[in-house]
Image 1: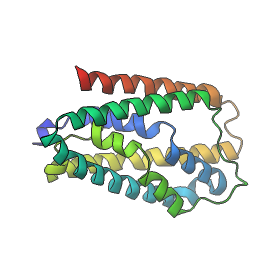
Image 2 (image 1 turned 135 degrees about the vertical axis):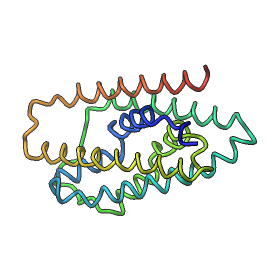
Image 3 (image 1 turned 45 degrees about the vertical axis):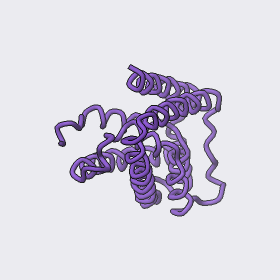
Image 4 (image 1 turned 90 degrees about the horizontal axis):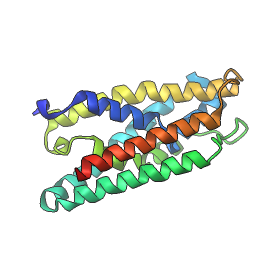
Length: 199
């Protein structure tokens, strides 16, 4: 059954989504600005736990429905594609505003809840994770293991990014151009999901 799981496509798709700006990544960057990269590392465990729970719950709900109602998969993936477009527009229009280091500290609970409610979890469970993962434990464990191996270093990158901004080491970074580049990547990924859904 694991032969049906395309590790390369899954890894690339997961990495692109995890790297794009969102509620969790913004909180990680803000925490990095406040505490430095090392002080923020424990929060990545909260991010991982939030995603694992959310993806598992969404997968458990969607998988049985898809077997009886095939249109549910189309609806979920269409919603995910539209959500990515919405986020892409929001990211493009926003001026890459990150909280300043003077704001209240971001704790484990805040990061966990933000991740648990992050719409990216629905995107992962409906369009990225294999549809049979919830019914096949080896596939589920392989997907979650690869997801975890990607999330941890990407989370570290976001905390280091926030810490570098706080230390003034990234003066050459144009936040607007960086954010607009991320927006274009999101649009491309949205188009890919739409094409895979309706082809």
